Length: 163
Image (tube, rainbow, N blue to C red):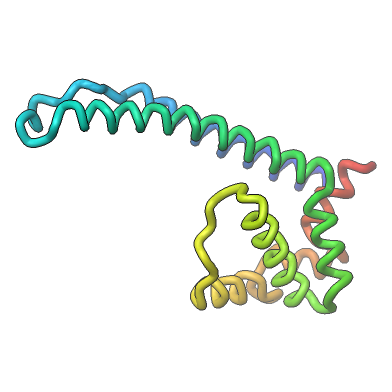
């Protein structure tokens, strides 16, 4: 499997996910009705219900803008070799696949938190254990593949666009 094939597959998955999420969101937003259903009349305030539905509709529009921006940033990172740069930084700081994987995800986590691309929960002991399990070379297909190939998957993405 070539680097171009892997990158094309990753991009296709990201775009398919975006289109599926936006399609489902569109259907949900289209079904928003500001009129109070007959079943809850007298139980819930009509003006509060209308206000909550209008908020939900505005939130749908805002979600479309933010998810589109996230898609553009992610595709720019893939196409511009941003993940390869982060991987190179991690490989320059530590030796060994486990430490490189942990540092890579740590750097990504730091960048996402610093620039607020999306809200992330704070680090908990469970998330650290999950990171250790997911990035162990024997159990992680990406780390195991990268050891055999001599570079990480993020580098494959960066290299294939430079050729």
